[in-house]
Amino acid sequence: MKLLALSCALLFGLIAAPAHAASLYAGKAKAAAVCSQCHGIRTPSAGAPFPSLAGRDAGYLKLALEQYRDKTRVSEMMNNIAGSLSDKDIANLAAYYSKQ
Image: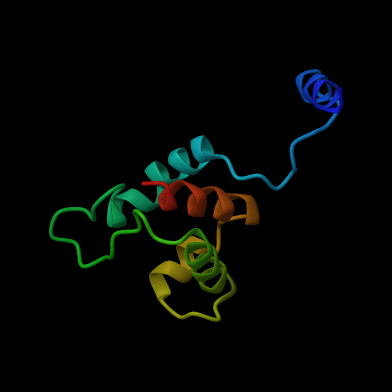
């Protein structure tokens, strides 16, 4: 009975998904617009000296992007790029690349 009530509540939106849940679709779009030129989606761009992000741990990616954004991890290029990312963007990118 409790399972039925929970299922109905979820179905009718009475229990909302966490506001901070990452979106793979949003991560894919942001990756295509911002990251893929250097890092690619599954492999880096041809001849690029940049590491592949595909399959990396989401926690690692999230921390690295936050550090680049906050300039506690220094790379002029990445500091500039990550500086424009919101917490939600970072969560979405980390979730997306970790699933590739």
